[in-house]
Image 1 (cartoon, rainbow, N blue to C red):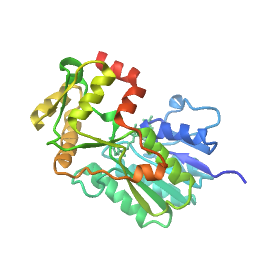
Image 2 (image 1 turned 120 degrees about the vertical axis):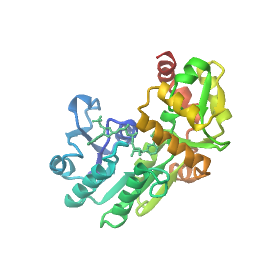
Image 3 (image 1 turned 180 degrees about the vertical axis):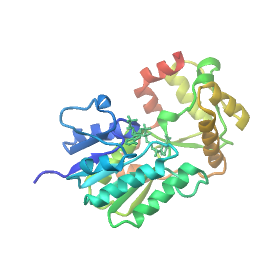
Length: 288
Ligand SMILES: NC(=O)c1ccc[n+]([C@@H]2O[C@H](COP(=O)([O-])OP(=O)(O)OC[C@H]3O[C@@H](n4cnc5c(N)ncnc54)[C@H](OP(=O)(O)O)[C@@H]3O)[C@@H](O)[C@H]2O)c1
């Protein structure tokens, strides 16, 4: 019997592109939903379908014949509606299982993004479909957020209040999604996914080793961090979201879990490994 066809939404993004590759490597049948076919640089084995979560009429064809789907939306103000459109299309086309990329702190952190994730987790819990919710912590791809001070002053400026930062390699989020999409026993489960937990000094040490130059951690206040993020090119609205996120860190609400290693059956990837595996990308960051 054919393996079920798995639809990946967000297939050109950080997690989704990894997920498409890992599913294809595992010989699973994959359909990738893209908005712009010009961005679909997948292997021939991937069934590419054009669709847009903001245009529900485009989703019926994309979901046809799908048994399992991975759902995410980018962190935009419309996230809740975009993901809800995916859930509706899934229900209407007979999808059996949804793996949903939520966020650590969903429904509990008092900011729109985390509240929207919480609302969509609730939608899934009330739906007749089966589901698995993945709540990853800070992506290593966003660690640090801004590179201006690392590049220009050899400083890692973040407001940790002495707390350890939890983080995760997006490749491991994709690996967890593969498990939840292809194995039984994950229905109705919410997984808080943590890959590594480091102090600011330990993060700076990892960066120093990867970049081959001394980086010093500054456990900064909000204004110093705000200035640094603005200097790194973030829009003011995103800067305030990042500062909010760090407030939850200083409140002690980022904690470690062993769930990821248990799901994957191996140790999660460490921050030092992510840096070593992304040296070309780091070189771009510190040269730009
Ligand atoms: N970054 C973090 O530290 C972090 C931590 C925990 C959780 N999260 C969660 O992770 C999620 C984002 O994942 P990511 O970083 O992998 O995303 P991403 O890299 O921003 O990629 C977003 C993907 O969604 C697609 N997309 C955007 N709008 C769409 C639409 N209207 N219809 C269909 N597809 C659309 C994009 O396609 P195009 O190529 O067409 O733009 C792209 O493939 C968010 O829900 C966020 O809350 C992030």
